[in-house]
Image 1 (tube, helix red, strand yellow):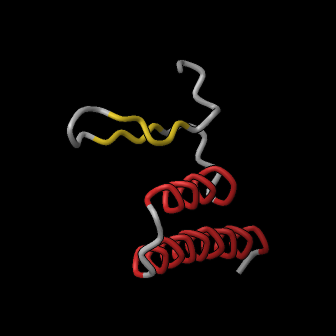
Image 2 (cartoon, rainbow, N blue to C red):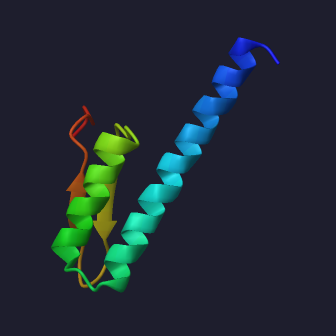
Length: 77
C-alpha cells in the first residue's frame, strides 16, 4: 500500500477514535448524573476543541425556546 493510502487510512481511524471517545465521555457524564450545565459545557468543548465543529446552535423546545450553545465561529449570529 502506498504511503498516501496509509496516511488517509490512519487519519480516518484517528477521526473515528476521536468521535467514539467523545461519545463515551458524554455517555459517562450522563450516567454520572452531571448537571445540565456541566453536560452542555462538556458537549461544547468536545465539538469546538476536539472535533473542530465550526457552526452549531443547540436549542431546547421545552416550555419555550432556549438557546443553550452557540459555537463562536457562526458569522450570522
